[in-house]
Image (cartoon, rainbow, N blue to C red; front, top):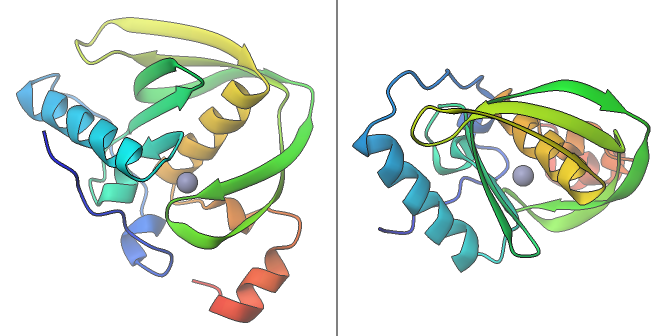
Length: 157
Ligand code: ZN
């Protein structure tokens, strides 16, 4: 296991669409374990493979002790709306309000390739949307309330 470097805003790899995982093999396990080390080392609550420069559809989250590994995650249902503060390890020195669904159902696979489906609200819904956005090259500052302030300071990248 090892920590990997977290890409920062402006790195064009953060804007790429990640490809689905097709091989549930040792490389995937190594990636997941490295992502976990990297997330904890940076005090994050979620991390997408895109953020460590691996353009595959892999997400991890730790929400108050509940740990999730989501491979090829898709949001298959959502309802309601919430607006809360978000931050991102790839977007340093900023946090901002983002509108997200209040509740989502995520369909994904685990590291062994088995189907999983999880329904969660509040922070689960927010974090899952944030991380899945990464897999599509979307950053939360693309849709946050005060994004203009961020773009004025750092440019739109
Ligand atoms: Zn993020």
